[in-house]
Length: 399
Image (cartoon, rainbow, N blue to C red; front, top):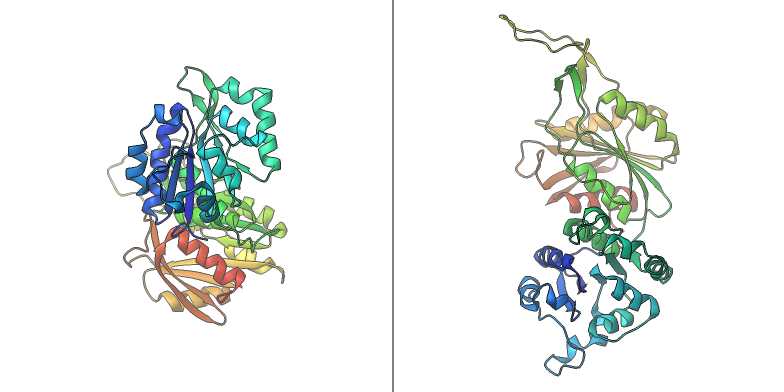
């Protein structure tokens, strides 16, 4: 299930990190989710219900005994309606209540009654989090099938430094989207994704590179993870946050990417090469900075190793190989030639000159090219493009 039209309950318990719930609720609502917020009495000391009501577009639920609510927001009806339930922040107190099955307010009562996928986001002082009682309670929650999003580390509001920081809203949102994805059609399969640009050194301070942001490859890694795959992401240098729940393998040059990918290829079921890998590198790398001269500078370049061609050469019949082709002209003809020449199962083609389909943007428009034909997926967000690519190539276009 996508976030659009999903019913998500956000529970907010008492803690200074409650302010971060605002960003989470706002983002979920803006993406089309129906968001209902439940607040504990302590949470109201840190942030007002009016704020979350404005951001969610729904009346915030506070009191299980109030007669002001319509019947459809009764805790049982709301629990039945929910597609996902997240408590962020989750205090030590609320975690202990959930672990013990205590339901003494609207939040804990609804949480206990809900049968949808659930997520707890702990946020508290480091020593409270590491207390054996809290750790035992978290383990109990895991044993109930509740997902736990690990706390971050850093400076805490109490002045301590350590674990206990509530993750940023984008990371919680990512976990909620994973929670909503119940179609694990890649369960048990190993997927390798490449992403981002490579850098080819000229000297200690300069390099040849390209405009790739890595967003498409990172979206593919998230989508494969959400579909149940064990994912390895080999990534060039980007400004993106690491993808939670996947093995991150950082590289810089095309040779490093070649080495890391080929070393893992035989163990993979699916390989998706979305990185923008340099085709050429300087034949010689200067040991010291190249200083400006009076004349022009000529660089002698040599070919890098072709990762996609190498994987196509050694591909097993049980493996699926998906390549990317970013073109500026003759997109489909070039993609079909690449499909055959490099022994791919699919080529994902797009035109960098087309609006919304270039580097560093959050959307893409791709055409899936296979021996059977071509399918234009249309202009979509990169996250939705990634999900559609996986469904089309690995589950079937009509599944």
